[in-house]
Image (tube, rainbow, N blue to C red):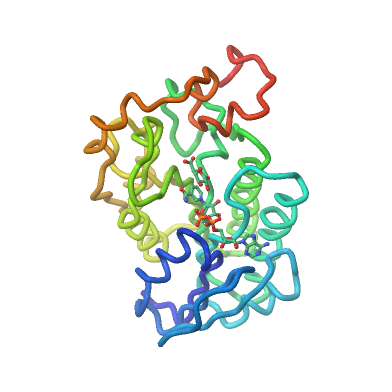
Length: 267
Ligand code: NAI
Ligand code: 15L
């Protein structure tokens, strides 16, 4: 992969730490950033602590970078203030910093919560209408549109990965549908860095037979998942919530939290 310096945001987080370990040595320089403290730089690493809410600091962070893996920001539902600064302003600062620095592509850790209010019974693909299930999901839908603006208008290619649930193992019945193994996440990032595209949305999910999503767009780009949540089915299939809106929708408890709408009106 012809990248001299790759920036990983969110490097102190759950997936950031996984990716730091698994991407070590893949590029001449891996620049690691987070607002939180990180382990000191090892060989081939740079560590730059930075708050995504600070536009000048983010512009500096992007300088000299070829590609960005944008995993930083609030990763769960939160107040408007937090979502606005970490995820919405943070994304604006990142894409604008990338434009100023001549970054060639950005792989964006979007989320299934951008479309979380879709019913589980509706099998959707990358062209489904946005249906965010909260403020957090809305910030991911915004990030996807921001990525499209900078891809088509400024030539920064973007792969938006609507990650399902990326943990060491699935934890409940819903995650039998949404789980993405760490190895498959790395496979998707390899596709994002290597494939030829301008702007694409894909689902970050392993080869789960219960998946909510038609991920043919990812397969078209070259994604071939090797893992599946199916082997956990016997242990987890009955591990459900008691909430009808959570069970009806792809976003699960993100959808049911604060829900005051009409379930029969959901897409
Ligand atoms: P995490 O919460 O463990 O990591 C996020 C990191 O972003 C944290 O280290 C945090 O300190 C950092 N951060 C938060 N606000 C920041 C700010 N203002 N400036 C700079 N850094 C800031 O989350 P996780 O699980 O590692 O997720 C990584 C990314 O993937 C997130 O964007 C999340 O939305 C996305 N994602 C993760 C999924 C999963 O299953 N783990 C599913 C869908 C999306
Ligand atoms: C996400 O977007 C979150 O970042 C992650 O912690 C999980 O809650 C995941 O979605 C999920 O839907 O399981």
